[in-house]
Length: 466
Image 1 (tube, rainbow, N blue to C red):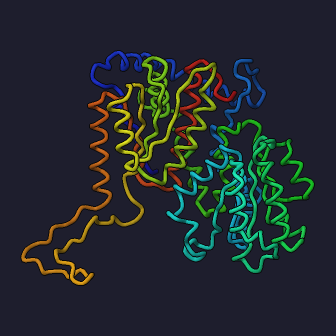
Image 2: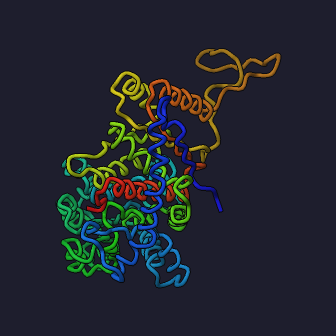
Image 3: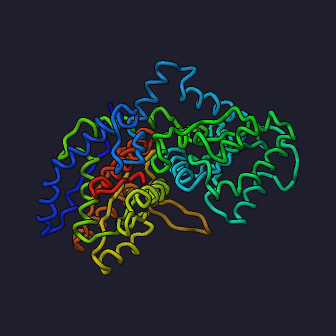
């Protein structure tokens, strides 16, 4: 089995941070108890076999072990299980259209965008259909009421021509994701896109239904729209899974499958984190350690600014999604952390200035990827020479040519410089290291961040699902 993500909290304890370290050690028994509650009690509470205390309502911990349940169900029934149905519906739609519009609530859209950025090739939408592996381009709307971006997307889909789409290249579909079914922003843009889709389908109601997918709860306006359309492609979000932690339900799996990513590997990665969390004591449990370090920084050390500092552009959308998870779960009673996403090395100077010369009120979680998916690119020519009439003329070297550094090696140097800068500024920092950015490790990262947020909420004595 591939290794887990690596979590290193060594730099979370600046010089003189002995008290913080002692507090972390003192939390071990509390962390183990919270883990056992989530593993052993939340499931029976959701099933109704034991009573749920009022302070735990609503209880939306169904996202925990959902990957294991989904994978087991698929292994038992590769035709009729929920994952099998997702794969069948999305595979058919991928062959019929070249563009998909995802109309999603804020958290849902950000999660799907995070999957696209982290698991698909960079500049995915700019690639030809062949280079995309015959997967549709993915566009996101519904989480913004911007008139011009919405009109611009409709024009990109040729909706302004009011003509029937001819062939796969002109055809498109709509996926609406609204777990509550009542998101006002989604409702505001749904009707214009449905009208445009109907025209694109030549007024054929059956074709319209086949190019429309809804992901929603058991009730709500979106469920009603799907029923009025007699849409066969409706996927339900389990009531035990709240919207905030729904990414690895149909909320993320449907758009993920349409992108062509391996959603099985995504779930397997999340399952690996669930297994580690369930069976590992606090001292070695990366979920519990991340939760505890974050909790201590805000509650006991007056460090409310929490920066997820990503060292790969493909993880920026993951950071924005995490901001929503943390804000919704932990900001209660006029207290809680202020999460922000910092993309390195782009924000190196700005953020470094804030840390070294600004108030010491920050905790930094560095997230880095150890190996690139592409071959390392060298930063300059390996041969010497001169520019002549606009052309580079190489000169033979008398000895061995100097080997230019690769971009990953330069990035590693900048990373170490930044880490040293945090140490000198006495800013606590942790490091999350990802072996390579793929579906398996992205699934691990998603589940790690969600579980750690839930544990931190319970450490604070609040309900992270409320």
